Image (tube, rainbow, N blue to C red; front, side, top):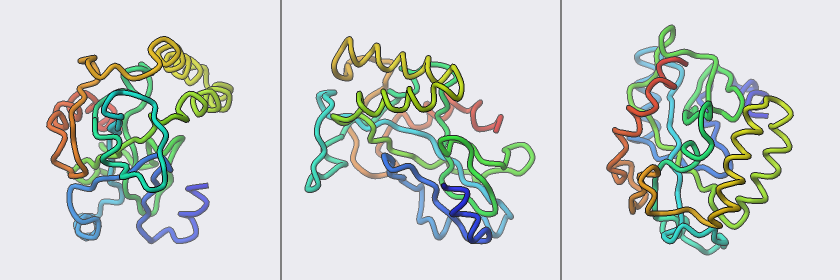
Length: 202
């Protein structure tokens, strides 16, 4: 669907974001696009950050909720629980390109084409009261495509069935209280270094 839509206007810039993500850009997207045009770069990459309820509960999101305030903890939960080879990268801005499965990659590569210097933050609002149901659907859908998807979603299922919430004290997740600013998450540099290989091997 993303590629079919973007193909309608290949020369335009697109933000191929999933419905459970909100992107925090390092600066105004228009400024980023201008810099990309100047240096002939067609792809801006991002990295997932999970947003969690303050108590780690899988809470109901209502229309009048402030989503940033309701899920005010940020960290690395989804990838930690799913395990290798779950991919933490996302495509944030794209021109004249195609995205791969889950918008994690594009047809551009770091070594051959280059990416924009800054990495954007894809804040992942997955952990609502629908997460167990959604995980089951994804497992059924993606598990038939590649076996590693089934294994990853099994890992999530086991954790959620065991704990019924996210353990906010688990140091693996590097959870911190944040707002909605790009610089709020203090472990961002560490997170980028942790998953750097996924970016440079694109």
